Length: 391
Ligand SMILES: *Cc1c(COP(=O)(O)O)cnc(C)c1O
Image (cartoon, rainbow, N blue to C red):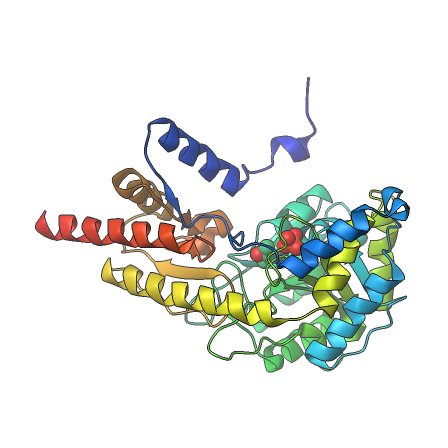
């Protein structure tokens, strides 16, 4: 049987590869400590689970949901934006619930990209932007990020002919995998760029509320003129430890939201309604858990940063996101380093090359590892360091 080129050309999903390696180690009886995938280890807060339990009993929730979601959920999402950012969105036209933001991020390419069209995206980046473009038969033009540039793309460096061809620009701050942040002024430059070349800006705000040291992550939609050129994807996954429940949000330009809604309504039938009720409970309920989780992550961040520096990896403590992005010593590839670390210590880190060529030379460590596993992982790294010092 012959599969379509889009399937044949699909790069192996990075985490699938890592999972396979971990399984192989475990089969050998080796206890693995994983700083790999970014998936909160702490449970969903109990009042959100209670909402699901109540909603599950309700026969109205046993039937097909609507793609556009319950009006109460769209209103709760709009109210969250109003409270969090002082922005008002029309819940009927400017807000769209998603089956996790990844779903919307993947599908939105179908709204903008015809075969041969160009999408601009940073490198390194969350892999779904490029895959969405590829599925729509478009091609990706990468904007190289580096530490000197604060992991922000230099939009002025995009050649004019490429910018004229481009249909979309992907951005993601706070950033996965680098932990970098952007300010409103950067977002305003992105709006100006989008206006000049008639490009849609797609901003991924998955880490809006995973922040440290009092940092407050701005929304792209706060930039002047953002609503004319873009939409923003946010997620309940990382904020409320809800990765397993699949709830995300798109807000912004009404025409763009409508296009995404039309694509989605032909592919999915929306979010199960009992889960939509969880979303309403999360967005409207007490928010204490958010700060509590961030305190846990921040303590882990500090320990992981210290440990990385002790084994000779340079890194800056991130002000947001769930990741420490650490520079490996020169002369080794990120896959080589991660493989050596796994073989020597049973500690899993993600090679930076998995996020793009510019990720080479770095590894990513997720802060979603339980504290006891972190204790064990850091103990092994310290032992590894003194081994190396003796050799
Ligand atoms: C986790 C993550 C997402 C996906 O979140 P879901 O809402 O769970 O689909 C999107 N973008 C980035 C950058 C992420 O790290």
